[in-house]
Length: 135
Ligand code: TYD
Image (cartoon, rainbow, N blue to C red):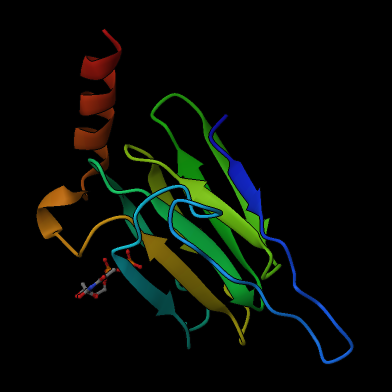
């Protein structure tokens, strides 16, 4: 399965809703970094990379967006539209993000600090590494 979803428990009461994220509890790794993508312009498609070892959870905390995941053998698409749904992306998964709604805020929880050396930004190289590791 490429699409791995995590349902976060909503601590809701008459005032509204709250979700808490905790490392190695409902987030299945050490949390080293959090970033968010917002104000995305119309028709933008971003991502276009895989990570050698980074794990991430994507949460669309506001609005909606679509994510394409590709493990080198199979591609799947999912719409993220709920702040209590996390998309777990393990290492060696190619991802593209697109169809961002105007109000979309896509929050990303990451297992490592930013490291350009962990990126595979060339799709052919990604497929080559997938093929070698499947032999
Ligand atoms: P980029 O990798 O192009 O984003 P996306 O994968 O969503 O298409 O990142 C945009 C810029 O932000 C680029 O200059 C690298 C920088 N950046 C950081 O400095 N720290 C980070 O944690 C991330 C994810 C990106």
